[in-house]
Image (cartoon, rainbow, N blue to C red; front, side):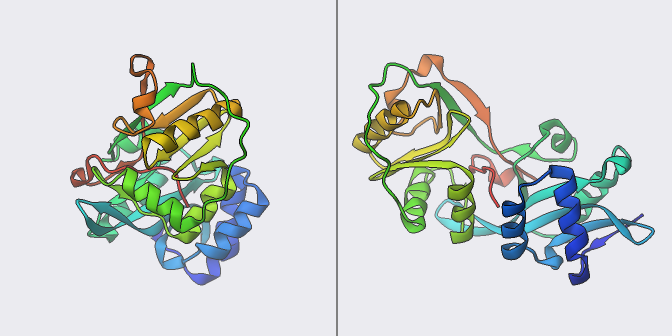
Length: 258
């Protein structure tokens, strides 16, 4: 088994691996490989010359204490079924960690696996049931990526967050139902607002009524957010978020992104 970085000729093999392992939506797959493929950031395991496992360590940055710092963000960690439970992904994770002098981050599919490989959960959000909020029939408005990014950074200014470029915002707004009011937004999945930010109390109230009007049953938000102040803290439950190899990132918000 050879562990190494990918090369440009691996494009089709890596795309096929992702498609097979994740049964990926073809539109998403084409978008990801068109915009994010960079062989120098991909670590592969080869058996008899063929790729059997891989991960993408996307170049990323995070904001902490007012300073922007470099990191990598792992996505697409995949192994063909017949090669699993042989320690191959463990070797890929080790090679990735050794390759960089900055933190390596990810949003885990199987948290205990990454904990066993030295990753720790940097932060959590609170999950609130959306109860006792009057529903609104108002329509969601459009917010461009720069406005979304401004709200996101303000929401996480205290503890820090993984930063998102314009392409990352595009992946999120196309991958989730996005509901917005002036100065607030939420990403919706399976009837839950899995990320919700508001710039002030008025916007928080407006967003919650909009969410209620769309049948949302649960809101995930920061403990000290404007939204949390309007919801029942006694019914809140913690939801762990992303992970890092570096304990200096304690408190930094890391969510799923591409």
